[in-house]
Length: 166
Image 1 (cartoon, helix red, strand yellow):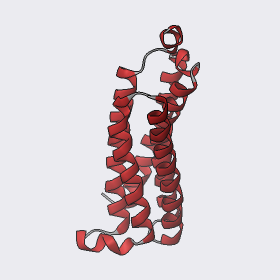
Image 2 (cartoon, helix red, strand yellow):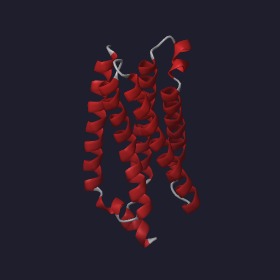
Image 3 (cartoon, one colour):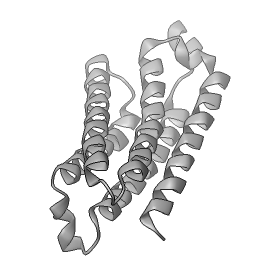
């Protein structure tokens, strides 16, 4: 598959997942009543939005202007890593849901790898792939982790109504 075709399909799929997540959250309004649960739901939202944005910028820059995708991958991955680490740190302080720790930790590591590869694309050479192909593989792993995060969130999050009563 052509890399630009991959990124077009990938980005559209991620934006679709963002919309689907909005629908899920609308059906669970209780999630928005407690700040910690609202932050966790927002973290899931970002886990689809940020890869979608990287996919769009890969299409804009692509192979014709690698500076565009490289700079935006670094910035967006830094935002993803920071927000993920912030959610992890806050959950530890507040004794939040432990089920989200493993997928978030893995996501933070993947965001860091994405940023590093954006800064130093030559690191893809030993893999015998282009930097955009290497980034694509990391993004696929990131979205796979996002699905894991959704599963953990939806199967381990107590409704805000019940949590508020506890």
